[in-house]
Length: 331
Picture 1 (cartoon, rainbow, N blue to C red):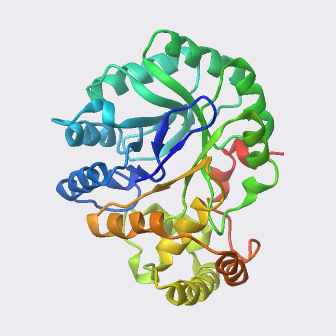
Picture 2 (cartoon, rainbow, N blue to C red):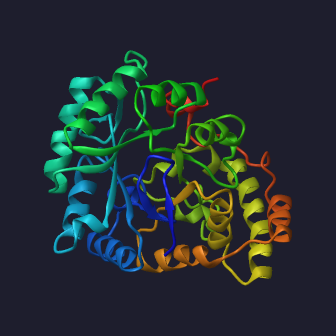
């Protein structure tokens, strides 16, 4: 596994990271033993960046990661944690809390659940309108000074917010959705990140499975939040799966899978971008890791662009309520 550095101030990590959310939440039932085996397989393959959130399964995801790392060298893992999302007992969402006092509270619980004395990258999952980004960064900077976190990351913020945050303390990386069908960051956010020396950890590189080549309408299950996403609904889904079929033809011509060519496309966008793959099973992990060996030629890139034009996707990436929480979607 080759490595990349997250920005000018961040850690060196594997070129592909593993996102753990689906092992605990939001994508329907998961097999815990298989989840741990998948994390082990990722580590054995050289994956070092492991991404979780304290609200994934209300702490379950962090404890799952703790169990997976038991008996392994903690220093071989770069643990990235998102915080701030508020949940209820039924799994509902109640906004975000990024007050400095809340940040310290969230981190204390995270460290206990992970069984570690530090988090490598700590980031608010979303911002809150009543707390200035300068106050959020100040609190996180204090935690860096205390040694409880090593680097500060952000998630789903726009270019102006990123610039304000970075002026308080260096931001290692911005975690944001980026894929063939989610390319809005290319206009202002990505150029600003590059100007500031901030890396990009790209989530949703397969658009939550939509452009994996494996998605069918029959895969919707109880407890899978994708059933509420516009891109997975009705006529939108039909239109988007037509794009996947076009991408499949390009992938087959190269002798790779749809998922591999989609991930390879994100990898090709720059050395400062690290895609997060959300594999929950070893077979999907193996497929995704194969993307690291796919080198796309100019002809390949042109064929991919023709198959999946940047403006061709049908539907927004979240529903209206969740889109309202995204600072990245504000001008």
